[in-house]
Image 1 (spheres, rainbow, N blue to C red):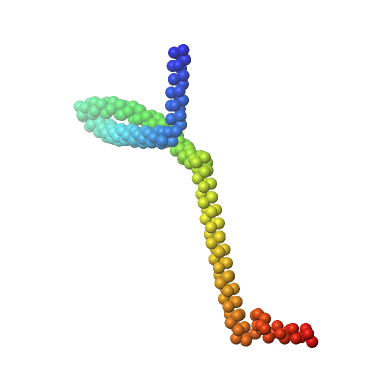
Image 2: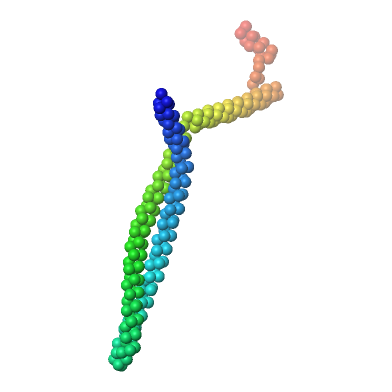
Length: 222
């Protein structure tokens, strides 16, 4: 029973850890990418450093080669002039320079191999980092879209749509009322003007008077 309880507790802890990891996935990914970018930058600096060492060895190799050529020319000239003592000293210097040249060549070969290796590693890391950054942008966009389609966001959108509909209805009603008031005002003004004109004897009377009614009755009696 105790073993079962421990297993259940471990399972719940694992589920909680997974849930937390899922919730914090984007912040974790951002930090991991910052770490990766720092590693890639460190790799670039390492390549640049090794290239600087290799360039120093290359210059040393060129200097040694120039010295060897000059010493050999001078040693041959010394032999031609019968100065074997000077030629012997030159030969010793040449031997020392040749040993140094061999050491420099080995170092240069090591540097060149290391540069090629580091460049390959750095290029691969940069390509993977670019892929991860593209994936991160897609994940962020997807996360924003999923948040937009969440229940709370949909409810908010529905509420906003209902508010807009009420506002548009109220504005429409207000506009209709204003138009009705204007129409009523115009109609009232027209009727008042008609009554004034009729009272002044301009045009036919608007209401029948006693004289016109009596005249009509006489016409019917005749």
